[in-house]
Length: 251
Image 1 (cartoon, rainbow, N blue to C red):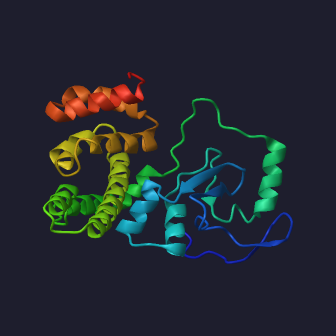
Image 2 (image 1 turned 180 degrees about the horizontal axis):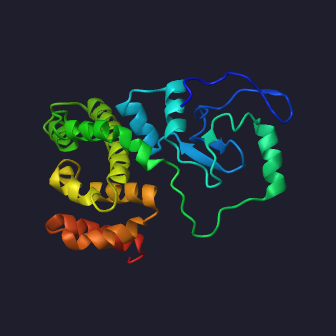
Image 3 (image 1 turned 90 degrees about the vertical axis):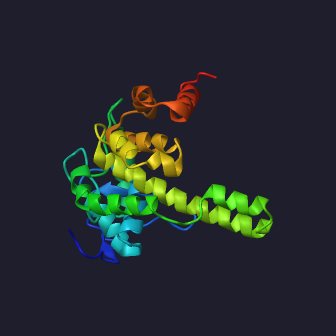
């Protein structure tokens, strides 16, 4: 694993200087990392669950975060690595090669962009974070609503609290998706039930667990939930059934 990025590189093809892109631009929601050999790429979203987890769990940002992302990416289908410097080829040259090659993925082909086995290096830290959140005494949505309805807080404070809770939960859900991918199809739902994730986050968290499995293994959320629904009971089964009907076009 490299421990730094060159700020400026001479393109091996055209000899022009360029600076590798290591994070989304301010007005962008994602950026692309290219293979060092071919012109395949992976798109890393600003809110990608693994990226969010690395930021939160390892407390990384900027260049250290980009290095971690590069380290935990799976190999390209061609067998080579993805790198922020695209094998020292500048964006202009990459675009020219892409225009000439007209490459596209095979229909139905699934390729997880993350190296799941390597990410297991931090699985313990990820699970420790989740357990810590389950024991957290931070105010939840129901408590915030109760304070507002009782007149204890004004609308402005309520909205600020709502935004804070939404941000915290979005981060928690991203981490849970990453953990689900690492736990795998055989363990994720069992462990989620055992540790009471639905009690803290509601039955909707099971959809997030399914989304993590889709991210790692290409198993559709609908397929996973349809399989797991029979193991649920009460409100959880009802809520998941409703969700399945919606995404399956049942309404």
